[in-house]
Amino acid sequence: MPALVDHACELFAPLGTIRVKAMFGGYGFYCDELFFAIVAYETVYLKADAESSEAFRQVGGEPFRVTYKDGRTETMNYWTVPDEAMESSAEMLPWGRLALAAAVRGRKPKKTKTKQ
Image (tube, rainbow, N blue to C red; front, side, top):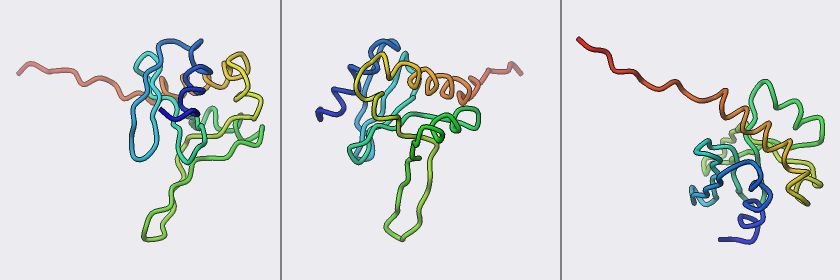
């Protein structure tokens, strides 16, 4: 694993059981099976939503942007964290909790089987 991925795992450890999966040239992070963070282009991004993205914006966070080969760009609701959050798990903890809360709110309900 790249050093940044290992470092992020250490920062996220107080949140719960962390699992990392390589994906699309980057890495996805799960905490207790909730997808809540990515590392892409040597940057850590945390999941946000309409309720939490303003908190990231207020501290100078930048959203994750993808540029496709055809020139299109897409902004995803994953945000950078303040520099100090990258220094210690105590500083990362409130940001990680925001990301997990967004992941919970964004969870799709489980499909239920209906009897016919």
